[in-house]
Amino acid sequence: AVASLINAKRDEIIFTSSGTEADNIAILGVALKNKNRGKHIITSVLEHHAVENTCKSLRKKGFNITFLPVDRYGLIDLEELEDMITDETTLISIMFANNEIGTIEPIKEIGEIAKKHDILFHTDAVQAVGKVPIDVEAMNIDLLSASAHKLYGPKGVGMLYLRNKGVREGWGKYIEPIMFGGGHEKDMRPSTVNVPGIAGFAKAAELAKNEMPIEIEKHTKYRDKIIKNVLDNIDDSYLNGHPTKRLPNNVNLGI
Image (cartoon, rainbow, N blue to C red):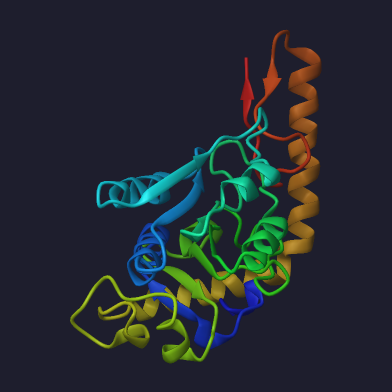
């Protein structure tokens, strides 16, 4: 159920304790595995601390980190992204949707740019999984982080999608483990797995997938009604984030 929510295969999912842990495994694992090829990573100024601080820790270790600026709506510029790519670039990590202002980034287009330049693409989709349709194949996503409690599952369990290029052998081509001590989760996350948490995650994912069309329509209607009422009736009020390219369940207003 968790894999099908993002159109992935079951053996492409490893379970973690959180979205934050999944972000760390993805970014650090790719950076360390590919350091001989290059030490340049591109991300954005709008990332969650789980991505931002992980990238900053790599900067202290000699990696070159580019933090792309965003426009007034929180969107990155695709041309600027492509201009920042060098022969040393090994990873692009851009969040799917922002956790505060709700803006949804042009993920499919970012994936196409990454694929064109043979660069891995990771997205922190913690705020988006279960809220909007996600297709890792169609969007050319190589790594994706998510967390159960953001879609009404239990706390203490997350997941990392890793594009299958031959299971262990394929993953070994582009990522390495950052923790050691056991063979759990195909050697990528050595620790006793949270079985009841994973079961809860699976049920939440199943419900989210089945109810998504109805929930999107309902939340979008309420979202837009709230935004319109505030902007029409309160002087000097304004909307933060993109007016349409945003999560259906997010309203962020300034007064």
